[in-house]
Length: 332
View 1 (cartoon, rainbow, N blue to C red):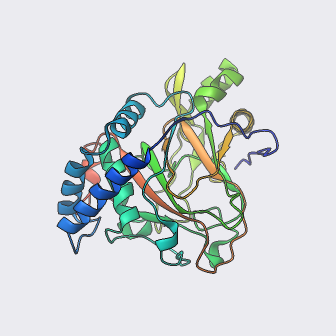
View 2 (view 1 turned 120 degrees about the vertical axis):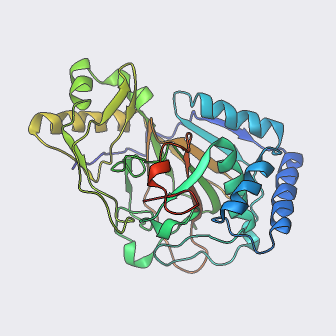
């Protein structure tokens, strides 16, 4: 297990690819969301039939938005992130922020439909049976009983990690749609790209980090997890590697590997950035090259706390086909 120290006084730069919808484009997205939800008055975002309709509707998103999503899918850039602003989220019209464990959004609400339209356009939205009961849209909200935990329900600083780093079919991309900011407007999403950190590592460490000398446990959000198997933290192309690590849950199997893991953590912290999401912002992170976390914040549990929708995306839906449970995109 390793801890990454993040200096918020220094790393405030954000270089990720971004686009902000015009008001006309925002109105067009809202109309598309309303049209889809009218066509499915009892729609549930987990229903395979609803998903098919959502995928077709997503093809009619504004052209600039389609171009940004397609470009990011093809080449996530040095930061591995895409920020889309001014999506149609009306924070004043929202219900109270949930504050219970395993909170999800199964109904086709306007924000959930928005998140799904963008997710279904960029790839295939999916879920894990053993996390959040297999729901496709997760509520990332502070939960009193989880306040000190390293989980999406916590409010302490969340260590840098790949989403579900332990899992062989972890997401390729993660989408985070902000419905409501925290009270102080300071809770930040931390992110760091191995594409930037790689140049700070020597070749010996890179070679060691590619060896199966590390073990990652399942996160608290999973009700079950496979027995931990050794794996490399870096993989793929040596000059542009993928990364697979959770600095709270990954441990090295020997001292030499542990030292390399600490140096990796330091390099990632050095190039990390912080992004404070506002209502109507949706960030996509490439989970293959980016680790992410969250700054500490103080929830009040008064119904107006920070609230994000989270979706997982595979770029190749067939990859986990043999692990699907039932007709929908839920993996065992």
